[in-house]
Image (cartoon, rainbow, N blue to C red):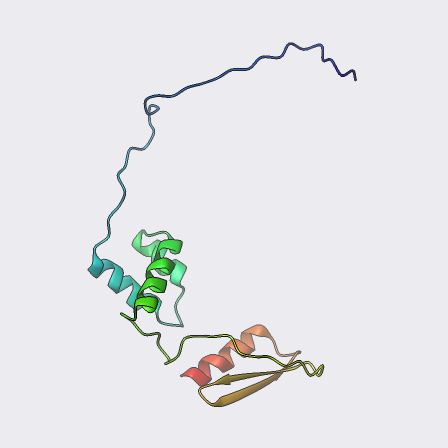
Length: 127
């Protein structure tokens, strides 16, 4: 293969000044405060899938997560279960044992405990 190709090279430049035929023409959607509040209230339940709620309402999941984050930050809503999740200091012991504290209750689990089982235990403690 040589550096100079045998095929002619061409460059085409397209410039669009008007919308293409069939291109969607839509204005930015506006959501009422009541609609946002109802969705955020549903999304605060730790047992629900926030993305599924958003898609069911015709909203992009990232938009609902943003509304939820804004409402929590402003203090207009409080997360169910008391405190919001937060980072804690973790010490490694090398034993493969983890400890999770929720509202003063300590859950200890070994590395062999499955993720789904641990989720069920955490839900039971929160409930």
